[in-house]
Length: 253
Image (cartoon, rainbow, N blue to C red; front, side, top):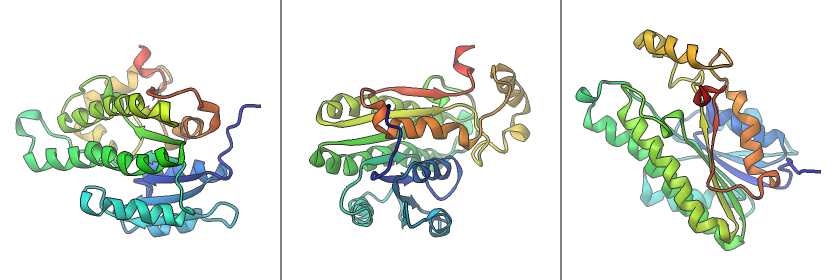
């Protein structure tokens, strides 16, 4: 039987205090993994305690993923809580800002690129070293529909998520033959805090997007869970370098 279980596995989930990544962390927990939630938010401790069970512990680590000087220490802290090894990294921390390109502020551009792209690389680099040393690992990055097209009013987000897709392939090319699979999930238009104001800010765009989704609705956090568990499990042993859309059929229309 194909093995979708994560029992005995360990996982680090960035951006795990809330939103889509919290849902994925919960799915890993329910599949049997021991999990560390990583987030800059003070909510991360409470999020971990709500999920924690004796059978599948959930720990937490608070840290700023853009602080590259202390990132090694943060990864070591996670590994220590997980018994010395990390089997799965879900790289999901992200931020958003909507603004016309001609007015887009430089500080917003820089912060989005740092969180959405640079931190993905540096977390993958730090955790990847440990995975390469142990001879196995699964890295799952969170891409986007904007990994495939540019969208409007979100130039920094689009640039960052296009970068995540290419970074996923680049890391896979180097590491897949050494036991570390690197893939990405590209969520479609999801109901999250990053998108909750789109209906008011860009009602025409919101209606156009909804009308294009063959399933007729925006996605929910739980819609990502099956794909996230699949890519973290032995069931996806021969998959690496893939960008998998979970979009209700949006890209096919």
